[in-house]
Image (cartoon, rainbow, N blue to C red; front, side, top):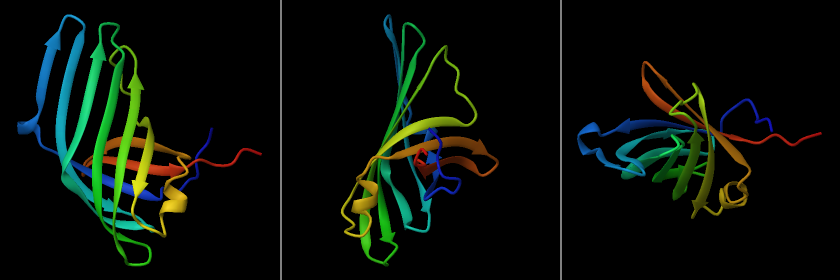
Length: 145
């Protein structure tokens, strides 16, 4: 399924390498990476609260599940203060991470203006690292003809 060309949210992730925790086991590997950051968009602008964590679990078959969970604090399109909770998931095989990688996001918000849009769960994300850092961009899925 295709997505619209312009992202409605762009997230610049700032990881905390010193806070990363890892576990190795006979059934897989777990890596938890704390992060914070900034958020830009026409619908919302703000920050990622410094309690975000990207949990990456790689099983014995080398399938990696990435699940980032974080809270955004800022203002919506009407200038009203609000929060957006994000759960963003991705799966990779053989340890490979495509560039860009694709994600499946879910949003929960207390913004009355954004809730009808964000609570539909009709979105896709992409992740790509450039010279400024790791960017996660969220797009609305395009309606199929």
